[in-house]
Structures are given as C-alpha cells and as structure tokens.
Length: 271
Image (cartoon, rainbow, N blue to C red):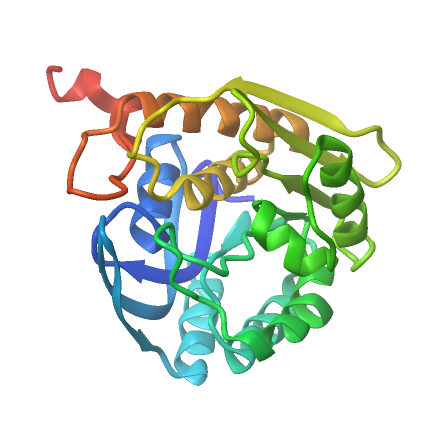
C-alpha cells in the first residue's frame, strides 16, 4: 500500500461540463482525501442540457494510460464508468486482470442523465461476461439493472431479485440504486455474497441538480476502499457524501446541474 492514502485509478469518459465522468470522479476522490489518476475512454461535448457529441479514444491508448499509471504511481482501487464499446470493455478487462487483488468498483454507465445512450447495444454481453466478473462492486441504477438482470423492476423486492441476478454474473457485491422508483423515500440495496441485503434509505431531494450522482457515488466508494475501509463502511460514507453534495449543489446551468463536490473543503476557501 502507498503512504499516500487512497490512490484511485479512474477509467471513464470525460465530461466537458465537469459534473460527471472523469471530472466528477476526480473531484470526489480529492474531496474525500484520496489521490485520483485517470485513464480517459472518451471525450464528450456535454453540458447540463445533454450530450452533444462523443469522441472515442482508441482502445490501445486506453490500455497505455492504464499501464502507464500502474507501472509508476500504482493504485489502491479502480473505478470504471463510461466504457462505450465492446472493444473498450475487452481492453479494460485485459488491463485489469493482472491486478485482481485490487478492489474494483464498476459503474455500468449506459445512459446520460438526459437519456443519451453511452453504451453501444452489442457491448452489453461483453460487459456481463468479461468485466463484471472482475468487479468487487457493481453499482447500477434501476434502468441499468433491468438490462443487466433481464427483468423489469417495479418494487423493492424486484430490486433485491435483480441484484441477485447481477451478482450471479460473478461480482462480489452489487449496490442497486433505487432513485428511479417514485417513492418519497429512496432505497438503495447492497448485496454481498453470503450476507443479508443491506437497505440504505434517504429522503428524496427534489432538485434538478443531480448530474453525476452515479459517478460520484461509485468514485466515493472506490476512495473508501482505497483507504482501507470495509465495503459497508465505504458505501455508507459515500451515500452520505452524495446526499450532502446534492444539498450543496452550485445550481449551475439550465438543465440537470452538477453536484457540490467541494463542500468538504470549504473551510480552505473562506466560505
């Protein structure tokens, strides 16, 4: 382990709006006391109104970025986000296989907040067969979980059943996020092998400023794991961090605005 607490290698797309992707992840890791490194999988032109364009990075260069970091700085955890094609997924899987002892949080990003598809349809089978079995934790929202589990989710019991199906693909644990259900309370479920489901409940925050919540949650968990926290403790801290980041959103843009990742460091800015 490094003397620097919590080296997190983030493998994800760039969000030019700064709320999600590499930018949101790096802010999260930094604000929780970790150290973020990056392997960028795609460039996006996007803002709070949506995604206007995607420019993919060649898979060989993605692998080169990962190898460059691992040969020098190293990592105490991995976090992946937008992996848009079958070739990219296969490349990342090959790059991570030699490092299977390092915790890996996989956020199966399929759609942007505004609904734009961020994963090519034929890449789903590669994600399920080659990458999920490498993951310590998979963190789907309900639409993503429906694709991965091959079932519709309407109730809390459905969430648990879907999470079990996803865990059967080979990962060690699943955190299924329930924000897409329309209850006033939001329930997330953490399922680990040989453990009872853990339900995390929060009051729904009615706001448009939720861009990057999934990225933020996954990278916050990855930071905790990199810092040596047990999975449940890392998930609970990340859950609280996301709630506070929503409440402290800077209210930027005319659409789905970003979170206030930096609320943890305001004492240094005089605010």
